[in-house]
Length: 132
Image 1 (cartoon, rainbow, N blue to C red):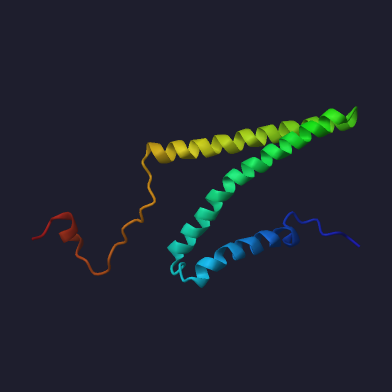
Image 2 (spheres, rainbow, N blue to C red):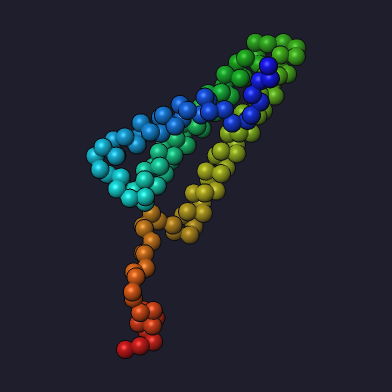
């Protein structure tokens, strides 16, 4: 029998969906999530709180890998050394992207104010000052 060799495995992804659903339950139960914009704001808040946790997990992984590399010898040591290098590169990429995004946000003064939505039935000539 041939094993399923697909990249996306739903079994490994289902806990993430479960945690996301549990994170949204209080907002839905308290009627705080009424519109799609509220849902997006809630998801962005969850993701913003996960970023430092991911960086902390990567640092713990690098420390664990360094200890494992120190105790092994031979080919195993080289494998742990490769994992250590990948971990350090991952931390560098995460912190760099996080920093670049913050630089762009503060440079262009991006705030979280909602955009004004156009209203239906307005006269565009009045909006730009062409008519009285």
